[in-house]
Length: 252
Length: 91
Image (cartoon, rainbow over all chains, first blue to last red; front, side, top):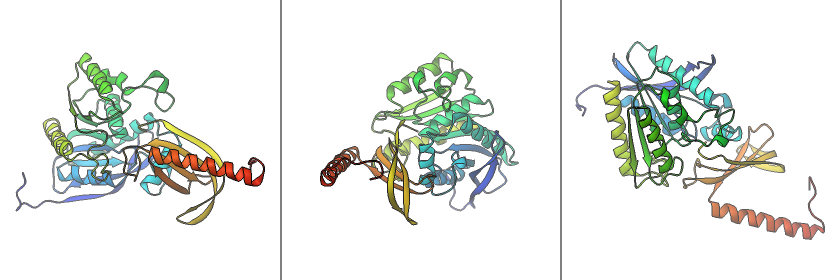
């Protein structure tokens, strides 16, 4: 709990970060004021794009004491409103996994270059961003915790693999080097409860450290307060608390 | 993407966007998370120009999308009868 008499502040702005593919992309960077040191977080935005919800999520993580970078994973699809750019990505058949991982690792390296980082970096994502966060965590050992919120298609059928999705994330589970928090809704179809169970079985098989929570009264996207059809206040409040508890234990 | 349900067709016609009328080139039809419509998933129809830089977008419930498709087909059937011949390319 914070003391109401204490000074506090957060600053957030657009910055450019370098992808490990060598080019620069836009990112939204929020951080608490003060010398720190602070833990860092990379936020992987969801299917609707680099939108207002993710700007506000960046503010939220910064308020909770994290140097928070949210890269625009759709940067290479032009500028415009978030939904227009996301529509271009949809038309292109999605962004390639390798590109997202390069942007994610570039974001981690950006945070690790900050003088007020405490040395710990976590990943967070929802929807496709949950999948991307998990995928990135499996492709680097340079991360300390990962939060996957209802990331669909971690489990993929062989016929769904292609140039953009060369490997199903679940098949990289052996390479995961950090603790994982997963939040899911029982009414979701992507990931379905059966797919979540399959992922959990794979994590157990490889002896990974993980915590999965399945909310019976929620489906896909239950954190999204701007989407009344999917928002579930109870699971959202509890889920956010689980996020802060988990990150507090692993990134402090 | 959270679904892979997506289709594309070229079209001839015009659309009106925020900057006024423009020539349509193709339409993307999909089913995924909507940007605005109050559903978990929606049928999205994007009417686009040749470079996909200008867009007229709609997001519909499945029921209303099916009804719209029926009404479009009914209208085209009536138009064919009115013209006395089936539609040809460009008509």
